[in-house]
Amino acid sequence: MTLLAVASRAGTTTGLGAVLNPRGRLRAAALRAERHLPLAGAAYVETPLEEALPCARADDLDLYLAHRFLPYRSRSGRLWLVTSDTSIANRAWLASAYRGAKLVAAAPVKVQDDIARMFRERLSDEAVNALARTMPRFSASRIAAPEQARALAVAGLLIALGCVLWPSAAAHILVLVMSLGFATSTAYRVGLALLGRRQRDDGEAPSGEADGGLPVYTVLVPLYREANVLPELAEALGAIDYPRDRLDIKFLVEEDDAETRSAAEALSAEGAFEVLCIPDSLPRTKPKACNYGLRFARGAFLVIYDAEDRPERDQLRKAVAKFRQAPPEIACLQARLAIHNATESWLAHLFAIDYAIWFKALLPGLEKLKVPIPLGGTLNHFRTEVLRAAGGWDPFNVTEDADLGLRLARFGHRVAMLNSTTYEEAPPRFGPWLRQRSRWLKGYMQTWLVHMRDPRELVRRVGLRGTLAIQLLLGGAIWSGLVNPVLWLILAAAHFPVHGVQATGLENLLAWISGTGLLLANVLLALLVMTGTRREDRVALFPHGLGIMLYWVLISLAAYRGLWQLALKPFHWEKTPHGQAAASGR
Image 1 (spheres, rainbow, N blue to C red):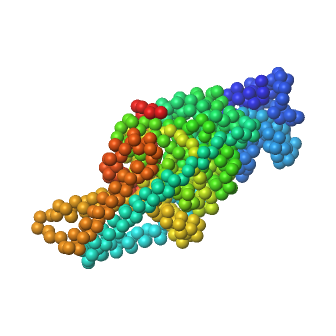
Image 2: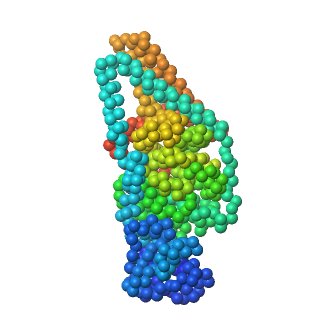
C-alpha cells in the first residue's frame, strides 16, 4: 500500500488526517511495507493531529495551487507540508522554499478540498469578479459602456425625429438599411461556407507518443441538475483513450445541487474523477463554474465537456499531437459537435443542420481566413497557461465561449479546428430550444457590445479583415434575427395594402427591392444547408431543410426574447435540460 493510497482511504478533508491514524500517529506498518516511497528520504512526523494547525497565508494561495500543497505547524514550531505532487521537481522546490520542513504525501483530492475549504470566499470571489477587476474592458458585467449607451440614445433619437419630421424618407432609408444588412450578412455566410467546405481536413493522427510522455490533461465538466445523465457521462469519460494517471477530470457541481453532488461523489469513489463544489453565488453560470475549476487545473492542456457530450475516444491524443505540431500562437483547438438525436423531431433535424453548417463550414472558413473565431459550444481545447493569462471565462457573458474566442484573438492568439467529433443532444421540444437559442443570441449581443467598446482598438488588434468578420458573422446573426420578421411584414404590406392607401412608385420600388432581397437571402440560407453539410448528411436532412425559412422565423422569436432578457435579466442563465432525447441515432 502506498502513502497515496493511505491518504486516499483516510476519507477526511482535514489534510493531515488523510495520512495520520485515529491516534494521531503515522501508520508505521504501511510505511514499512512501502517499497518506493513517493517522498524518498523525507522525515515523517509522529505528532498527534490535534497539535497540528494549518498556517496557510492568503497571499500564498497561488503557490499552494501551483505546487499543490498546504503548510501545517505543530505547537512545537515544526512545519509540515502536505502535498499531492510528489515529483522530484516539486519536492526540490518545496525543500528550497521551506527549509527544514517535513513532507507528507496526500491524495490530490484531499489537498484540493482543503484549499477549497480554507480559501472558499476568495476563490468564489475570483471566479466571479477577477476578469472585471483585472480587464474591465472585456467584462460583460456592464451591459454597455457609457459611450455606447450615449451612441445608442443619439441614434434612437435621430430615428425618432426622422420618423416624425420626414416619415416617408425615414421609412425608405430604414427599409434599405435593414435589407442591405440582412443580405450582406447572409451572402458573407454563404461565401464563408463555400470556403470552409473547400478547407480540407488535416487528418491529424492521435499522438503516437508513449503514455509516459503524454502531458496531464484537465477535463472540466460543469454540472447542474444533471444526476440523471451522470452514469452515461462517466461511461463516456471512462472510455477516453488516455493514461489514467495523466487525466485530471473534475466534475464542477453547484453547492445547492445536492442530488447531482451525491451522484458525482458516488462515481468519484473509485478515484477516476474529482468533485469540486462551487460555492453558491451569483451569477450562477457555467463560465463561473469553469473559472473556479480552472484555478485547480493540473493539466498543461484543458478541455470543457458538457454533461451530454460523448467525445471520440482518441480526441485528447489528437489534441496533444496537434498542439505540439502547431505554432505557439495556436492557443485553442475547436473540435466539431454533431447531433446524435437528429431523427427525433423536426426541430432536432434543423438543429443538426445548424450545427453541421457551423462546425463543418463556417468555422473552417473563418480558420482559412485567419480571422477571429467565436468558439462554439464545448469541445474547446486550450493551452492552460494561455487561458489563465487571457483571464479565463467571463461569468457575466452567457455565450462565454464566443466571447473567449474573440478575446484570444485580441491577445494575438489563434484558434484552429481539430479533426475530431463529439456527439451532443439537441433539444427535441420547442420550449427548451427557445430558451437555449434566446440565451445564445443574448450572449451574442453581450459579446458584440463588449468587443465594440473601442472599435479603433479592435481594428488595431485583429485588423480590418478580422473586425469585418466579427461584424458580419456575430453582428450579422443578431441583425438578421431582429430584422427578418420586420422585412416579411413589409413585404406582406406591399402585396396586401391597406384599403384606401395608395403606395407611391418609390414605395413600390423599395418594397420590390426589399422583398426580392428577403427572398434571395432566405434562398441563400437554404443553400447553406446544401453547402454546409456533407453529401450523406444532405440526403437525410434535405427534406427538413425545406422548412429552413420557418426555422429562421423561430430564431427571430428567440432574438427578440434575448433582447428583452438583455434589458431585464442580462446575466440570467437559462439551463438547457439534458438527457431528454428519446433516440441516440449513433
